[in-house]
Image 1 (cartoon, rainbow, N blue to C red):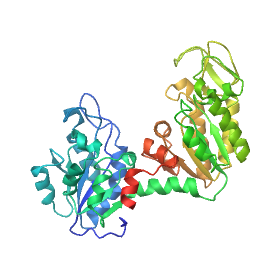
Image 2 (spheres, rainbow, N blue to C red):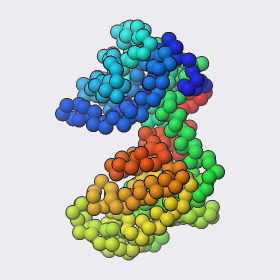
Image 3 (cartoon, rainbow, N blue to C red):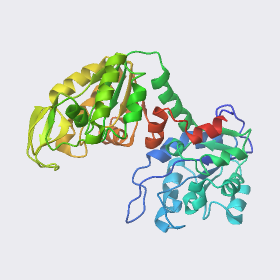
Image 4 (cartoon, rainbow, N blue to C red):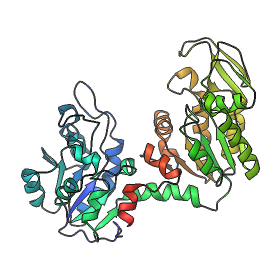
Length: 397
């Protein structure tokens, strides 16, 4: 496997799989969050500065039946040009003679953006012939799309087969792998994982794997109430997965057996309905009145969690502590984020991953005060679970 830092791109066309699946304004189709485009800039600029040209390949949205204008990558062209600081050519198709003519005639320092690869069903099907056509756009293949590395699609996995000696990770994907590996494989202690979000069911595999790695495991968000009910607490109308009560009990037992400090919230802000303007009260988490639901953690829990986090050397945060999208129920998530920031300032390595945690850290304006914010929600979760991601395996093999 080649390294992007040492590879000689002189006179080479680099087919770069990026993740430009960015949100667009529904009226004007302007990019409303350019985070993913900015994340790819170091890789693109490195290739250009080292004598190569770049052919950008990405998907956008989930078109169902072929091309749909609202999912056309031409809408993001102005944002890409603005961030790169140079003109970017656009191919109205990702395969075919016209697109291939454009990529074949690229000069060093030039950039071409291909149309949405998901306009072809062969992309998600991982069709060999489609991947082969894509491969003709480059002399070297660079995968820099961690957000899609868990998909065995044509442009993320299969296409690498056509570059046996000229395939590599981009800087972004390389950094994602190193960050997760540092958390999972480091000998630094203590290691604290904060796992929140709505449901236990979506986090079981991650929690069970983390029990072999962490010193402290903090459970938050809606999933905490399943644990509380499993321990015999009264949770009122809070979100609970009754079919996972036995699994919650099993996790509690495993944590004890492995010597892991499993922290489950002790107090909660409850509301009489799922509404930012609902009536609220602070109660012990195992004594929630009938008709009330827990929507955030309370001050006792925040204080205890902050102490654990600030004494840690490694921190993984995946999932909010409450319904942070509502201003009256975001305090727990804000304060956990602030504790992670303080720990990072004292030398801890902090990794934020999973869609809602990333949304929260960005919403609170704290992304630049933690060690690393992952760009891949589902991909990071599967990597944490120990699953070998197809997009990563394709480069390493």
